Image (cartoon, rainbow, N blue to C red; front, side):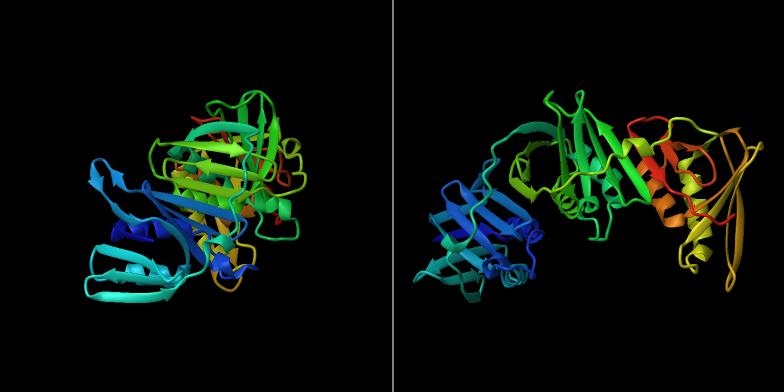
Length: 378
């Protein structure tokens, strides 16, 4: 195997596949990157057995030669070392050659590295995807859906199913829900080509976070293929495989109230900033609690106190308040996460009492919903 490549394109590809590589793997070959070279270009693969990422660098793009392939072949190189070497090479022209089976020479300018590779035959083969369900999202929308939901997954392995985001298709819509049992984030959308046949899968939150880092910030289409135990996200040059979580996701629809005693309409950015300020003192408390008071006036009171540090009170103007007077307490972090997901738009807050879950919705976009369980302090 021998090829010449532009260093910065090689680094981009390595950066993508490194997101799937972990030092804590049962199979030592998975600490390496599999490199496959043919006349079309280079395919690099990284995997930790839960996530597998393949990235393709074409030999030629828009009339510009990126790779000159002298001899095709396969090799596995230790990922961390290979990444560090390529990052520190002195010029943008890199030649990689395999001789005598597993001896690898990496040359750039007057620098030359000699590494010992591993046999690519020992590298696990990619999951076989019989596409039971297939549909399409623009990449920027896919990133938004992840941002609006994945923060609410559980960080505790006691209920593994809650560490993932539930994707449920019904009636032509895709409902994406995450909950850690203290809060819930839901996004409803209608992807292109969604089958009428309903499905229900749970994608690990960690997988979606890594996927979001790889996806471009544009409307390039992402094909999503769901099979028995795997999901595949395909862009033009990247394949991203993730295992699915096993088990039944709880029915979260019954948690969402349909009637409200108090409704508040407020600018989401102003509310986020006020809660951020109140949380400066709340942080000193173990639970990071902020209090919220709404009455017949248009001003909402946000407050917090810490016996050791002091207290803070702030009034912010609401756009509208209707229903019963309300005093409620909640986690400042949960509220700020929810407001960031709604992204600074005007929001409705709908309450059904001081100890019942309350919901946040964008005034302009009904497809995003956030739910938070309050904390008893009054």
